[in-house]
Amino acid sequence: MRLGRYEQAVEILQRVDKMQRWFAESSSLLGRFFEKTGNAEMAMEHYAAVVRSRPLDEATLETHHRLAQLLATSGRTAPALKLWNGVLGLAPGHPGAVEGMKLLGTGTAPQIAATSAPEAEGGPPLLVLPGDEVRMAPAAPRADVAAVRADFEVLRRLPMFGDLTLEELRAMHTLADRATFKTGDVLIDQGRPGSALYVLSSGKVVVEVLAEGKPPRQVATLGQGAALGEMAMVDEAPTSARVTATEPTTAFRFPLDRLSTHLATDPRAGFKIMRYLGRILSVRLREANRVLAG
Image 1 (cartoon, rainbow, N blue to C red):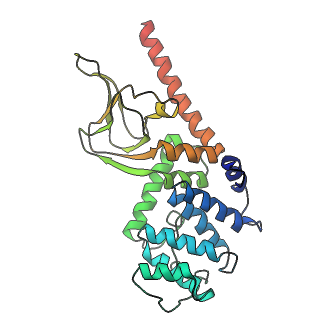
Image 2 (cartoon, rainbow, N blue to C red; image 1 turned 30 degrees about the horizontal axis):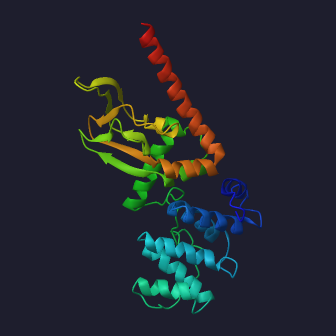
């Protein structure tokens, strides 16, 4: 990382097992990398891995603080307050924690139990951190947690992600935005630079090629599991077709800059996804050759 060879550094850091003594430091470095590259959710995942696996002490103090900052920024004030209270319990007067508490309008509240305290017997976790939503299976889940779990299961069942490990799936789930389209909404407009990869989770779309002075020519109708905009991952040419929702449609949206950075830092997941996209392009090329030959 000091040499600026971030891709190699991240690949090595991700190999450190949580049972090794370097795990906390490695996860903290990964968190800082993703934080600097603008992927706050991935940064929180790695910081949270430290909080879950190591007690709050001098070595993990700043990781607790950084996670609290990101949680507060994303509107998750309850876990942020718990983390900052833990920090202040160990290091009274910690400037970052004090400032964070003030920004949340709480002042320096009385310290509560440290975040690494054991959970109550049979009860819910004292602190829900990024990534916990898909691990938890409470007897009576809250609606928002249940929605996150259901959303993850939809992603898990899509063909593109069938070869990914559970950890790779969690990373992709965190990476994606959720997009909703009404009937008639345009997902991808012809002739414009591609900006995202879409994977349909429900609904249907029609793919049309536009030519000046001619009516749109429909070339495909696609539904759940279809990947759209994948050519933009191969080249930077303008999109070659328009994609329009023909019914209410939802999709996982992966911004190309964010996705490219992630796949570069996780080459195993990147290979699996690019291999799947390669199969799609190969099938389309064979079909185009068949039409031309006919």
